[in-house]
Image (cartoon, rainbow over all chains, first blue to last red; front, side):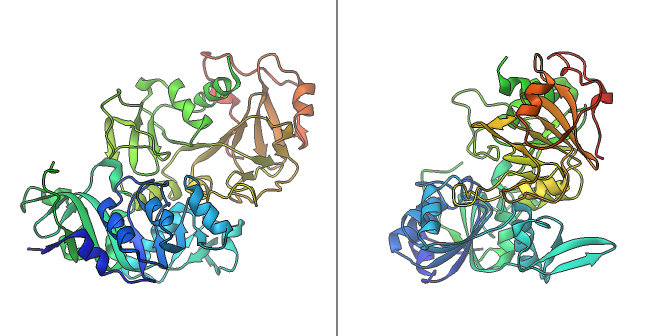
Length: 221
Length: 230
């Protein structure tokens, strides 16, 4: 059985300067309560690794608005003018990574691989400064693994041992990020007894989840 | 018919029954409306669904089911949801038959630039680089000219999306196939003559003796008018 903790207690574990992988795609299935608690605490100088920075007022966008983020590694920031403004002002260091490369770098970090060889980015500015490797007559870019101090996941349900399931397009980066964070904190929309999530529907193993956010009473399935 | 609909209808005729297809945001997304629901085509949204459907009825939206632009969508019978690693594995691994994307520039080598205007628009490449690198066929759907400036140019001045030569460019004026010997003008839009196309194109075009009009909307697609991968 996993212990649960309040969002405030989870946020208190995250120090200034920490690196965070945050699940979600344009705010879909990002851990909103956790993000709100980090904003309320006033944590600073965070590195955020995520697909995108959502939009102001939603998901990671709230961290950007709060000035909590000094570095972003993402594939897209186009829907958040505040991220762009922060980048232009030199307040946010942005590394833009092709989406398929980003998820594979996270996967590599999570599954013990020393990197990824991908043709994506060859001949573009993405290849600048990267090693090229030829395998079986084809050229690839060597992309390095990514890990983070914390992975913050948004899930549909968790059971008492921490198994997670996701709905439809709410999987996105969450399952791979569960492997690549030193400490993994999951925010499910509901917590259910063991067995309610059938074994074939478990997408993140409970053994990967270190902390579960306490259920929000009155907001079950 | 407006220019966007003309382009979308023409692109739709490149899509064969049973294909897996990814449509970009904006103009490319209109293509789905012209592919018959009975064709067995599956559309991918790279955020995690194969079998993307139309907008849900008002009040029936599900926050867990959106497309890559963040809009509420539905899923068709036979659909599957996947995570981002699987989604981009399909794209890079050659399992995606066609990708349709917008473009800022296409050049004589068939290179596409569509993700960045230095100093002006720096949104990030999202999935575009993986899509252009990995898809079976790459179709660029765009206006022929932007604010008076030709978008089909001798050499892209904007940052490239990939080194891969795109397979077909469909605009409001023409259908152009990038090939090893240059940009071949394949079709004209209805009522558009060769001089209009030449004037709107900065790149050199290879113009065959006969350049037919785009098949009229609703007309039958002839597989022979597709130049292939080159």
